[in-house]
Length: 515
Image (cartoon, rainbow, N blue to C red; front, side):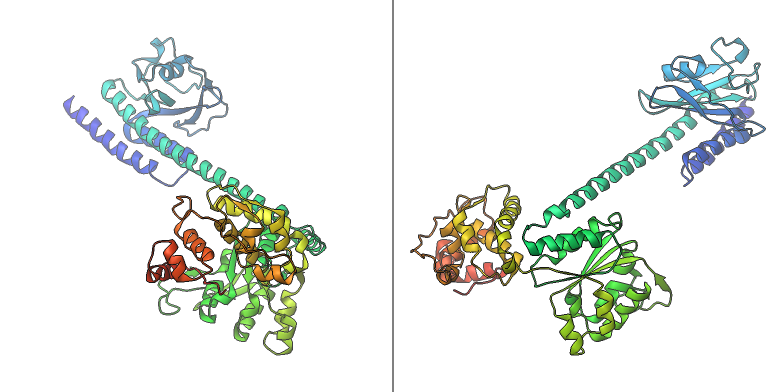
C-alpha cells in the first residue's frame, strides 16, 4: 500500500503542475475549467468531474462544466438551490464532503445521471476568500482507496481554481472601473466642449454656431480662420465632440512649433533606425487619429516642400512612415486653423493652390473680439469663473464700471488678451471685486483717456503680500502692478533686492509690461 500511496501522490503532484499551467494560460475561463476536468479524469482517476458556479442574482449553483468519458455536452441547465442536495450542502458548509458510496447517501440527487452508485464521491468548495464560496468542484474517484489523500488533493485543485477566478474578478473589476471612468471622461469632454461653452450671442457668433452645427454632421475638412486668440481651438473641439467622430481619438498639432523634419515624424511616424535617435518604431498623429479627428493648428506656417507631402495624405488618405516602405491608409477628419491670409499666400506662391482648395472646403471665420464687443460681459463672467477655479474657488465679481472700460478697448489679442487682463485684475483685487479702479490699474489708462472717460487719480489698492492664498507668481505680478512695473519699487514691496526680483521674474516667466 505504501508503494501505491507514493504513486498516487506523484500522480497528484504531476496533475497539480499541469492544472497550474492550464490556469495560467491566456484561454478564457470556460476553456480553462474544461481542461482542468479533463486532466483530473486522465491523470488522477477523478472521473465525471463537475464544476458548479454560484449565480450572483439568486445565490444558487448552476452546473457550468461537466466532463464525461464520451465528452457529451450538458444539454440542460441544472441548478442547485442553497442547501439542496450534496452540492447545496457543500456550499452551505463551506467544507469538503466525502461520500464512500453514492448509493448510501440520501442527499445525493443524481440529476446528471453520470455517476456510478457503487463508487465514492468527493466535492470541495471553491472560495476566493473565507466565507465567500463561489462554487463547487466535484468528481468521482475510480476506486475507494486513499479517500483522505484524494479529498485533500481535490481541495488543492479547488484552491487553484479559486485563485484563477479571483484574479479574473480583479481584472474584470478594473476593466469595469476603467470603462466607467472612460465614459465619465467622455461625458465631461462632451459637456466641456458643447456649444454652450462657446460664449457669445452677437450676430457674427450666431453665424459661427450655425456653421459648426452644419459641419459637425459630416466628415468634411474644415478650415477655421481668424486672428490669434479668437478661439479657433475651442471651435475645433466643439466640432469633434458634436460629430460622428466623437467616439474616436482627437489629436492636435501646432504646425508652427516644429521644423519640417520633426513635423514629418510627428505626423507620419517613423521606423526604427530611420534617423539618428529613432531607437523604436513610432506611430504618427495621422495613424493615431484613425477613425477620429486631427486638428492642425497654424497650417499656414508649413513650408512649401512639406505642403506637397501633406496634400497627398489629405487627398488619398495614405502615407508612409519616415524610413518605411509600407503604405498606411487612414480615415481621419482634418480640421485646420490659420491666422494668415491664405489667398495672398497663394498669389505670392508661398502656399500651394491645390492644398488651399483641399483645406478650404468648409471655412469658418472667427470674428475678432472688437467686432463683437456686446459679448464681452458674458465672456468676462465665463472667464472669471475659470480664474476663480484656478485661484482655489475664490469669489470674483466684476462691476459694470469695469465692463464699460473693457468694451472701449480694441483687443488686438482678442479673447486670450481678455482672459489675461481679467486674471491680472483678479490678482490686483484684494477682495475679489473688480471695479473701475482695479481695471484702470491693469494698464488700461490710455483706453479711458481715448474714450473720453473721466480719469481720476487712482489710489493703489492695498494688497497683503503675505496672503497665503497667493502663489509666488501672483505675488510678484501684484507687486509689479502696484509699483507701475518698476522692478526696484516692486522689490521693496516684497522685501527683496533688485537682483532677487529680476531672478524671480525670469524663473516665473513673467512678461514685463512697458508703462
